[in-house]
Image (tube, rainbow, N blue to C red; front, side, top):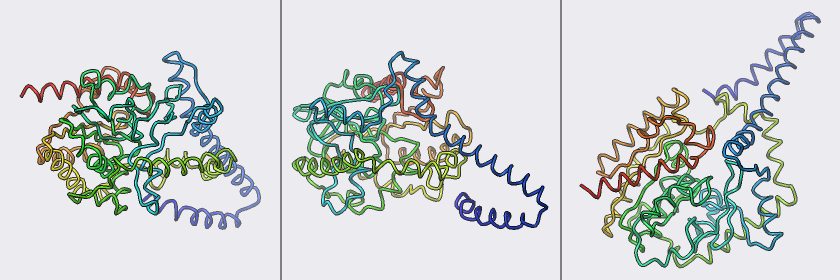
Length: 409
């Protein structure tokens, strides 16, 4: 329907304007004034919607009493490099790796041992030094003699966008010191399976937390990931790239890629897409539900059989070394603000939980504690953002309760 409106709308509008040429001059003047007013109003609304995320970040910073950093990510990198710090924007396999099939290597982490400029949702950018394989862990953790817990997931698991000591994986680490975080922005089910098979088969953690994000894992990520053969190959029992011994290759690939992007930003050549989006009313169309490709629950595009195969392979692999796979369900924040999204996500939730039950995976469900919380907005940096420190605490507490309950049974 949205695509039909976007394609057919301009033709109908053009036909209507041609028909208006038959109107008297006074009517044409009045109509032109009305159309011009609507156009101006549309671009004013677009400007407001484009500024809204920054406004929300400013309000979040004010709420917690910290100064707001108005720089973009590459400006932060530039200022760090001026001080002689080896800094890079956070790199993610879903964005930098997947489009580069010709590289012959798909890095699943970021650049190792560099100052990583992550994200800013509450006033200040999150900076961390990446570990030996480019993940958000304390350096040296890969030499641990034994791993108790490993976490697979996307940006929520990676720790966006709160200080390191306040993300939920770091809070879990207080109870389970040898906890390995393999979360990366944009990871969907196939990338999570890839991380499990590349790294965890060798490390053999006792507990693997599969952090499922309701808002995008099925509706967007999986549909993108399944287009890449080198990801779907991870469904084969023995497929691996051997990334534990190829970090230098991954670093060279990602450094080259990000240095080229950094140079382009410095030359201001990459800022052209922002004005183009403005003139196309991108933010307004997205707000009105007319943005083709937006993330929503489209039943016809949810590949449940593939999702089931992925979880089956993850369970088989984890049990192969004697580990236990836990399915951690993170509900979409939108479901708590809009009944329409709630109904859509309820459908996919029923399908996913049915698969989890059929596979006899241990479930840790965040929907009940979040839905019962006295102040749900407090759990997020702002509407549409990641968890706030309070949200991360709730996630960590719920996971720890789930692990304790399972250990008691």
